[in-house]
Length: 436
Image (tube, rainbow, N blue to C red; front, top):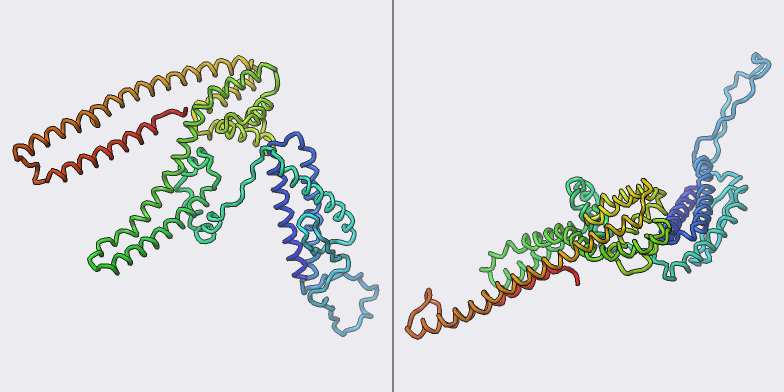
């Protein structure tokens, strides 16, 4: 009986996973909502029928028999004085109303065994056929370009959670800002999983540092000064994991700022046809021209189609969590405009004009900054090295030295300084450069 109970619970887990797969497939397919809801109902009915067998299975597994009350005797004085004993049901007795049933899944081709109430067998088979057919169709739908992205679990995150999940869960309240950056940067990881990955990476970095230090120590005992290598590797790994979410959030913010003026113009043009705001969002998502803005709009559509929020509430929720302030203002304004019944087209036209002005100002600001950088670059990396070389030639002609350094050493230092300065200029320009 214990094996029967275990088999039913395993099958229920499979049903729950199938339900999650159906819910994930619903995103971006609101037009097929009735089909997905029918699939969910069929799976939910199977889950309910299997749950109904659990009390009976537990009852049959128990060694204590149910005591049935007897009717009082009409003549108590005539009862025998011999003590009566009640009989116990044998251990692990299978109740008669349960039946075992096996079937082969047409999708996975696996043979499955379950225990079901006899009177529920027909209903279970009907729901099973409906759910299997639905899951097969959903698999075909997933194969098409529906716009639904189903991510596979991160194997490294699963491996890290296996060893560090308890520790990461205790540290989660202390890294709330890191969790916000993960959401703003659209990093598809929970904070607990991310912290587990960080701790696993630091452990691997520490072991790698020990290996390097041991190799150096074997080559020469004088290399014991490199004992800081393991701790340095750990520090580099921790710093990288701590700065990565904020870097991703900053990158998403920058990309959204570039796409937002054009996406708002597109939305304004669609709104002129007087269609509903939710359809405007879906058209913008399907266009594929604004991937970063569309990623934020998908959050709004998901809250409406999957979680059942109204559009105004969804816009306000996403506005609080997005990394871009301008997009947050746009969503908040849309929520206010929709709830007050304002003219959506006029609002989007005004916002697109404002965003275009900001876009032009940002380009002008970058042009002025690039001109300043050009002047500094010419002064430091063209004029200064020439002057420095002339000074060295004159000093070498008169036999003068510079701090005891030879001419070759000074030239090497000058070339190294020029290379490093060029790298700094390139990095700063790339950071400040708006997206082209």
